[in-house]
Length: 182
Image (cartoon, rainbow, N blue to C red; front, side, top):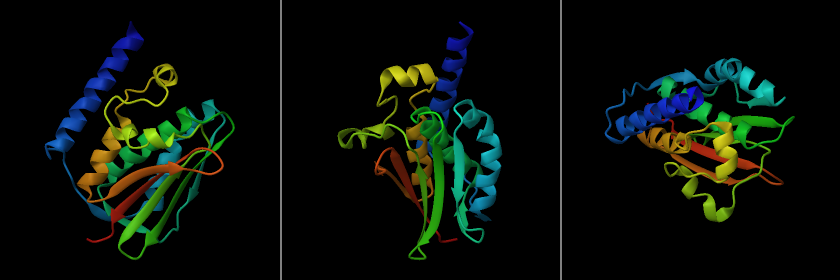
C-alpha cells in the first residue's frame, strides 16, 4: 500500500508540474551559468541510483560552456533523462552527458545510454503523457510515465527542442537544443 501511495503522490506531483508548465505558471528564471557545474552536482545526486546497477555517469562537457537557462528546470530535465537511461540500460553500462556549442546559436546537450533503444515508430510517442515503451519494465522501475512529457515542456519553455534517436550500436540518444541568447 505504501509503495502505491508513494507512486500516486509522484504522479500527482508530476501532473501538477505539467499543468504549471502548460499554463505558463511555472517559475521561469533563466540565467547564464556553466553547464558542467550543474552536471557535476547531478553526478553526486544520481550516484546512489546508478551504483545500484553498477552504472557510471560520464561527463563530456567543456568547462567553459555556459548555458542560458533556468538551472532548476534544467536539473529536472537531466534528472529525468538520467533516470530513464538507467532504467532502460543493463548493469555495468555507462550513461554519457555530452554538450557543445552548435553554430554559436544553440547549446546541444546529449544524454546517451547503452540500453534497449527505442523503435523508430515509438520515438515521437515517448514524449506523450503516460506513454511507456515497455509497460512491464516501467511499472517495476516505479516511473510515472510523465518524465519525458515534463522534459518536452521544460525544453519548450526555454525555446528549445528535444528529440530521441538511436545510439549506434545500441541504446538511445536524447538531443536537446537550447538557444544561447541572453
